[in-house]
Image (cartoon, helix red, strand yellow):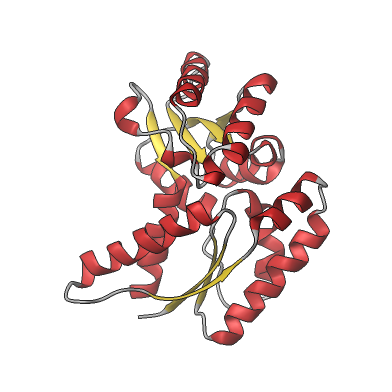
Length: 231
């Protein structure tokens, strides 16, 4: 088994899910008492969020590169960034390490393509929804069309992520707001919804949504990580 190095704490709520899902998947596949070989570098998300809000992507890039190098030196065979938004710096991180980075967008795209879907809606932080790094990768590398919610809808989604989900808060009122936005995206032609924030699966469940495939990027990323470290 190979060792996965995870850059986490963005937020700790999603990093918990990474630890759980990867270990459950390894145990399911290998049985007995098996679990994943894993190194985790976990940040104080308050510091990260302040840099995001200030759009200080240069500093954030330096932070991620430093973490990736540290994990590589500690013995990681692969690197994973346990958040969608910080994949904005994924290419820079990969250029500065000698081991492969397992990209969350690629993991999600592989599932979308396996379902023969070519038009998706993208939910995430303001940065994930509006900056080109995510939607352009889906379009240019996988020929997947991306529908972005309206500006006021983006603000609702972003607020729910940072002020509720990252704090472990789940509100029925917020769930209703998100479901309404999903319906609007379906009217625009979305056949799937990419949960492009690793906290969103905590509030949006496929069992509660009709006629649209839910792409859980946390789950997709974790399964791809499991594939890599045991193969």
